[in-house]
Image (cartoon, rainbow, N blue to C red):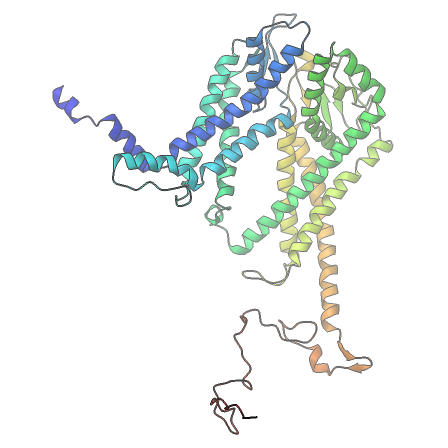
Length: 509
């Protein structure tokens, strides 16, 4: 026993050794914890303001804070259960407000980026200087934190605070599901912090080291095209939501006034409706693509669906804007097809512009037709994955029985988006590429005119690759001042071969 206790390593030495092996871990832990506290604090402040403004609050400030903690977990995709129901059976609430979810994602992203800066090493270097002769480094001279300590520290600090919040909210009226908490909270944290660290290191190429330079360029163009196509689809959905709200203005107004009483309750409903506007835009995008969305079990709403909206929907302003019946092939059903076509055109033009880009290091002059089509198909698959994921996250249950499912089905929306984008984008990209190359060839074979009515000899028209359109030679590998004129060289001897370097004395007046 004495030998074992004598051989134990002291605790300060263990801490110093861990600091040497994982520099910056402590600051990353603190950054992740502060990001979680910031998100919780914002919702807690809003909940306290609404509780104070309520004329007849049902619970004390402790209940308002527990609701804020549960709402913070809901923003991470955690399913909540309402315990105060008429039947006594807990009812699930699983629709994540996408606008509210953007706040913790952004906080995590910023925390991960700041954790990789050299400034976070200042505290660790100061503690190290207390244990040894090292000199404390300032914020300007500290090296950036490695990927492992920065990412692990932010994730561990954020998840630790999140588990405490889940434990605190478990005693309230909205209780989080521990299964969803242990799955969604670490997943959202790890992905958001990973993107922040990846961006902080300026998208390191080691992540795509298995691909060639041409493949990386094709993947990059396809990713930008997919983001553009997704933005067109969601933006068109937001426009459709606005038109539907104006069209059903009277019903929306009555729903907003009757859903609750008092300006405090109406303010809370208004904030919730604003937080759910991105969800409504995704639902409308699913409506545009064809699969539509569910407004309860067995009630699907689509442009060509004959189903009607259920009569017992929850009284909520955004749900009041749902069409009373399907398009049935009417004007609305045909009009919404314009948005998917526009998304396909945008993706096709993006890839055609990348295919006809000017030559540069590591790529040829233009892409082939097969390479262009491959890029469009890849962008369509990415667009389908993005929109399918948004569709799956934007929906969920609002109760049991008829309220067990609201929102679009992810795999249906993703498949429809990929089909629309690929079906429209491929011919658009091929045609735009052919037209762009044809215009380039016409400009290349055109004979420039030196002066009015005086054509340049035909030899100028067949300039090699690298010549400019005005006839001047342009070598991409030639650096400035690499070639000097020889007729003005001051080091040539005087006489017939050059000027005399000896200065001429001044003449007397």
